[in-house]
Length: 280
Image (cartoon, rainbow, N blue to C red):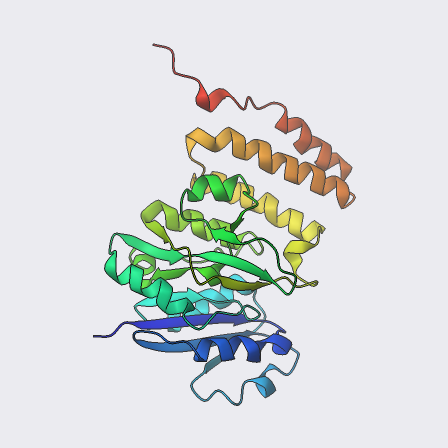
């Protein structure tokens, strides 16, 4: 049986980009069939007027509940053997899916496949998917690693068997948390070709420091602690990094007391502790 890929697109007020994104998806050359599921997360920009020319598109609407809820809704509807959570403003080259699908078919020990990421419209250096060492690359905020779900083709069975979904309490950091949970149960395969074209938008929340963004990072810290997703070897390094992000961020958004609190916590951690040998 030829494999089927489900492409799940959460969409909120992205009508100016959605046609370009859908054109890139429906022009894919893949070794199998494809279904495309768009979850309209309460858009107010006449999204429906921009998708009428795609009869194959499966359209569903939900009251605005956030990107994580939209992805989870789409996943519940998906029937593909492999799934791809694709953002509504990104673009995939013509062989993007196939170049991730074929390695996964051959290497059954891997649960997902990702590749390089090229930012546009302002071109930057290629980034890579966090597949080599997910905990370290994600928790230490490696600037050369892109955690956007658009880059990851995942075996649906892995997600079902281990009940993995996007954390609906999180927004911007939900992608990082998702990869950490995925890493607990499977390994990722990294390819070197066919980059994701990742749009850098001026309105993107992740590119503007705000109280909401800092609060989301604070919640990410709590969720990582709660689910014990930071390996012991890098736990202190993660705390040092996140406490600095929270401290500097809270000061910048006008909450100096919280900012100073987290900056002081940062200096109470011994970063060398994980590297010391346990005394016998």
